[in-house]
Length: 94
Image 1 (cartoon, rainbow, N blue to C red):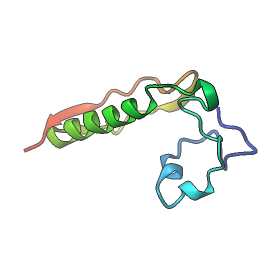
Image 2: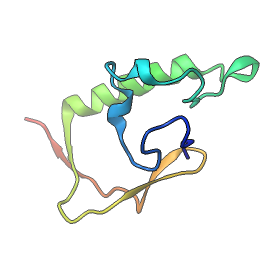
Image 3: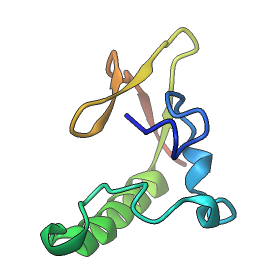
C-alpha cells in the first residue's frame, strides 16, 4: 500500500502518477519497487529493459481488451495484482 503522507489518493490505481510530467512530484524513496540503498535488487535495470521489450513485442502483434462487464481492483501484497485476475481478450493485430 502507498503511504498516505507520500501519495495523493494512495488506494486508487492511478498509473498516470508515473508519467514523465508527474515524476518530479514523487519524493525520493517514495516508490521502491526494487528496494534502495545497499540492498537494492541487482537485476533492477535488466528487469526494466526486459519488461519494455516484452510489452513492445506483445503490443505490436496483439490487441488486448478488457470485457465491458469486467470488474477488478488492485491489491498490493509483494507485487501489485488485480483481484479478481484480468480476463483479457486477445486478438491478432492486422
